[in-house]
Length: 119
Image (cartoon, rainbow, N blue to C red; front, top):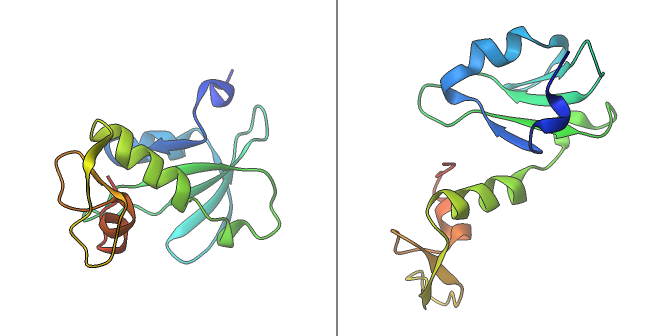
């Protein structure tokens, strides 16, 4: 039996990429992403292709329609803030930005993400 229901909507799979994919069936290949499904419960997953320079994620998606364009940016940003222990009380150092900095960073989550950070 699968554990899809116990998984969060966004799963960081960089350290177990092959293992995670081995439990799923590949349906389609996109641009650096795969559409996969669980053979037990048919949950659809948008799975990043492995990249040694970036964190890889699997995202639960509701439908096969438009799967490649499914936007997981908000989920990744939420996880980035959580992984760093939240936000500070001080503002981002990016000119004109009034959002709070992510702990351990000089920037808000939006500017970290724009700079390529995904973890």
